[in-house]
Length: 546
Image 1 (cartoon, one colour):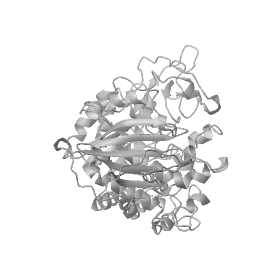
Image 2 (cartoon, helix red, strand yellow):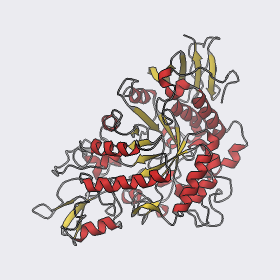
Image 3 (cartoon, helix red, strand yellow):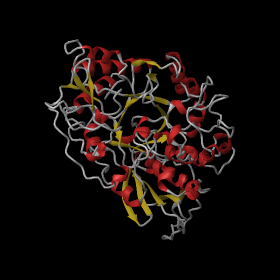
Image 4 (cartoon, one colour):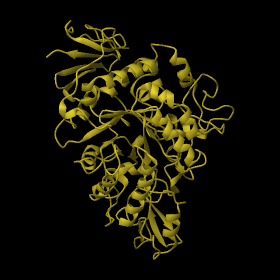
């Protein structure tokens, strides 16, 4: 919680940083609409439900929301298999529902980012239906098609992330088509300028409606090697959790060197509109190298995030220090973004600490996230300290979890509905059965229950985000002097004459450290951290005199 000594910070950033773009140092709140709020009592969240809960989001002090896909889809991968890029799936509402959401968000001072999926479509998309109909139709090369090898097997050894070969035989066309995910998610041939043009038209449609930016899904999967070379093998350190996909370096099946050329076309389009933010998701063998290429200079993406923390089984000071070392505040380095949780990764409190420590660990984790240099992303429910719900096999919906059971991360456990109150359905729906069940532990962390408690995770999150918003060094400053020693993590955020020292105890045991000078102002204390003591899972920020 905020220390009573805290005063509002009034120092101003340098002239160079006097008018940064809104997204630089912003906090973005990710909404998975299917699990946020059900407005029509069918057990599935929808856009009108999101609109009805935007006051809660605005109360957190975030700058923007990012909406996971709500487009027309057969829902085999729950919206990431799109059959119409310019319409809303009936389960989520209508295009008018989205327009109302956009207007309400803007009234509340929230920017709106939406997902764009450019690596693949649904097999139900009319473009794919035409492409597979023959080898000579106008869209014949809009997807990745290839002849079999001489023995009839797939053209390469590439593997799908959801299991099995990344190729499916199509008897209609007499060729294999590529799919990095489900067979019902055929891969676009983004090398084709006509495909790029069509996707840029999609982006233009939503920009004209008034969105404030895009999160580009699975960007490293966007382009393949046209020479169809086999991927090299990779060393698997833990076969107990490995998929066939993990036994290869995806050298040729993704991350083609021409991907930035498409990003430059996208950026040229978004630059025609005011204040647009483009954010890429990048999951690659060496994600930092890929991210830096995708956000290099002023002509590609504004920012990107990788999976340094999202899939990390533990959180240690050494891990944080190593990740931050890749992103010094240097000219041309680019601006990173960070997330500890999202719809594809298990809840961080369940990965990083024991069950009996989660309520203490969660506020420290939030303080660490907002102290990092970059744009930060808070996933829905993270402000409540939600844990991973454990679902039995018969209740799973996630195709990846089903295909790789029991060796799976189970994305469903991070997609269960938000608990708005402590009723059986958590206030998510009225009388319907929620599409995924809500566990008792998370229902006990409801918004209603936490709103009334000044010491709750929800209210601590509001205080932490308010501090980031009021402190230029935390939003825009460099990250310096990062040190990791055992469970202790220390770094400084520095801007002009303002230096904020951030201390974190990532272990469960109290530790001593040199007493803070009485002249240094404590601006944040988590879990009873004080000038001369740092309890387990505590954090302490103070403003240092030079």
